[in-house]
Length: 434
RNA sequence: GCGCCGUUAGCUCAGUUGGUUAGAGCAGGGGACUUUUAAUCCCAAGGUCCUGGGUUCGAAUCCCAGACGGCGCACCA
Image (cartoon, rainbow, N blue to C red; front, side, top):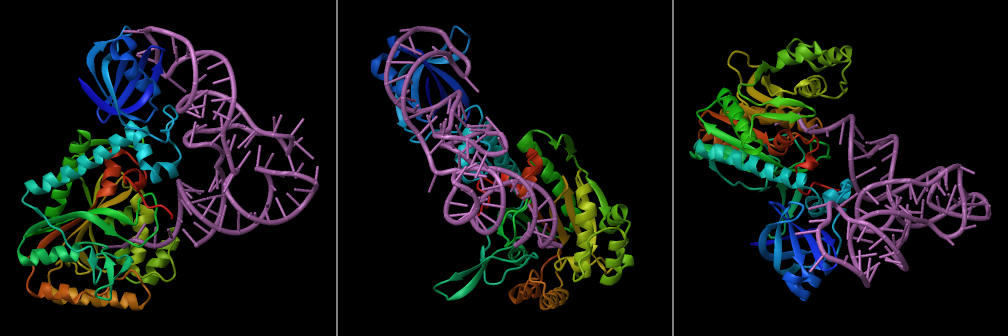
């Protein structure tokens, strides 16, 4: 048999050498003797450094101590390691080295390797799920003349030949909806978005996002699909729908708890936001409840403040919060029974938002008014309010079928599935200073 | 951006109230050993104590500034 891999341990014994060779499937011991391997081979093995990549040919035997080993007939140096590997027993713990030189982290830790295998399985599980339901994967511009589809500041870059400013996308939403207008009917894109913001345990400036759009579906259909998709990804990555989380367990088995946002806010904060329709009144109620409420924040930001301060941390088991205020949702369709609300939900799990979905606004006139509201926010100093996209409005004017759309944060999903509590643990090369 | 904490050998870490020449294990170098399991034993080597100032007779140690990192906050509809 032939094995090739990294030399991770060696026990020399004069005219006998034991060498542990590791590849992605695990570690196997090679056992070399002078009698069998000869002088040149044995001195090559004896002189190899930990970290070298070697190839070994031999027959499988069991040693006196009972370990399955390869009795070596020939050995080959495939690549020398000029620098030593991380300490085998203590491992690599310095976070800076772990992230900046992730190859050392992977080398040192089977756990870290398996982490990224699970990430890959979760992602392929998501793709398989969507493909099997008739979605097609599309690719839309990452460099955009106008950014939109989310509230965030963009990265700005420059196209030399055309002499113009371009933005790295903050979302794929507006292009994917153009695909729906064109009749592709079920589309998704799984790729990087870029938001010019700080880092935290759940934020990285570039991150992986899934967006799906399905014609003739609404947000209830999307909620049902999300539950099935996430549980399918969990099965793919971990083998089950119940995953460990911070010493407890999260059960992703559908259906998930559903609750109206305004009811959930009232449950945890005691505040009925619809009873406080103006910022001053809501701000006073929040402060009376002991919550932070900035003086300048508009009503929508205040509602979001209650959500993130009072409600989000309590949402450990998967929960779907339904029916958001219109002001928070410029691309979502109004509810017919209450025009202050839109047909939108966000899914929370492990105390984090993992998904955001709505029945897409397909009325171009209403959409134009929503853009105008954003322009007013922008004029009032909200630099995260996105600019109006006339080309997108033109597309809507050609007629977009009623559509259910979804955004799912893939990095956060992987955190949830693998019991990792920092986004840096699920991104191979996370953003670092300099 | 703000606050707290951290940075000593390739890796993991000690380092006394500020006191002579900054230590250990592993890795790496030399040697012994033909069934080891973090093999063992002997020898030698290995340092910008993050950087720059300052205090002091004397600084890894105290002070200031900076870099980088971690955590928290802010930001993130």
